[in-house]
Length: 113
Ligand code: 5GP
Ligand code: ZN
Image (tube, rainbow, N blue to C red; front, side, top):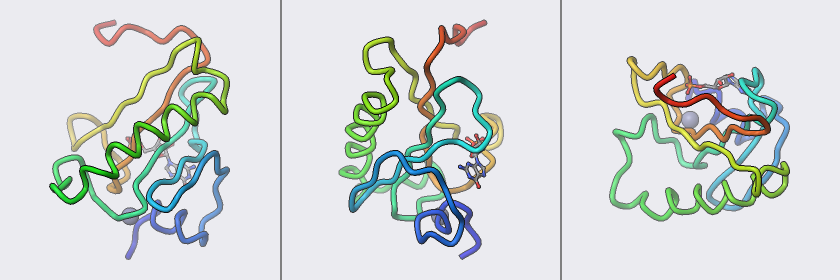
């Protein structure tokens, strides 16, 4: 399958890994938008948030637990961070493998800014 993040999971494209378990992988974004910018993805290929099924409920929870772990490892657990998903065209989704951005390390702008 021609999916960049599936290739990162299988190791054919390198990444700077932060955290991994049997269901999820977290790695540094290649083009950081903040001092801390990690991506957290399910190992199962799910294209967008709209494609999440009942059977995926557990992995979505795992992503939240992984976010806590990533935030601890990257030193933003106490200072605060943002976890966000872009779904589809208007949100600017570019990679069609479900992913959550974890952003922090500075005071982030307001969503209505
Ligand atoms: P989206 O706009 O789809 O929510 O975000 C995709 C993110 O993936 C972008 O922040 C982009 O910098 C990141 N990205 C794209 N290709 C790669 C890659 O090959 N490696 C890593 N580590 N990040 C990538
Ligand atoms: Zn994929």
